[in-house]
Length: 254
Image (cartoon, rainbow, N blue to C red):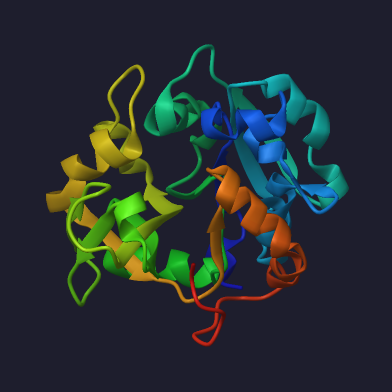
């Protein structure tokens, strides 16, 4: 591992309300949804630890105390966990902004959605970000059902040129996989109060350095009952994948 990556912090966005999964989860916060006998969020923690990222910040909100009780200080997994709890729903960008005091020493930091898993070489993603020299870099994955997610348009060098909203355009394309590396300059583009990375921040930095890099590994989110059921079916594969880096011949995306 590059020594310059050793102290990189990872911010995990785990404050969402998980409205679509509530009938399935029965009062459990979405990141604690069981996959096999373990919470989904443990997949992300194990992935980060395996790839040398040991300083984590959990941005909590809905049922924050449940997540804090389950993961504590992180010592059980060989990581340290600090918490940034939203007083009210702030959205993905607002949550990152609230965590700024915990990232004062960080020129760059990783951000991950707490309800999706992407098999990726995190160190290579960081290296890509630093080679590009932009404000933000995102992992993207080609999906057949891009209409559900919206798609990302980017040039050969990785520079993002635009986005297609959910339900528009081609039914296939590159989607935002919910894993990013941000330069701390990102804070200059996040407004105060509730805000979305996807709607309020990324469009503002298109001309200032937003880059995308394709990933080829297993990708899954648990945002809907159907995908949560799929995660259960892939449980063994997901936990095996935690200890692997992305490869071009990994299984096809859903």
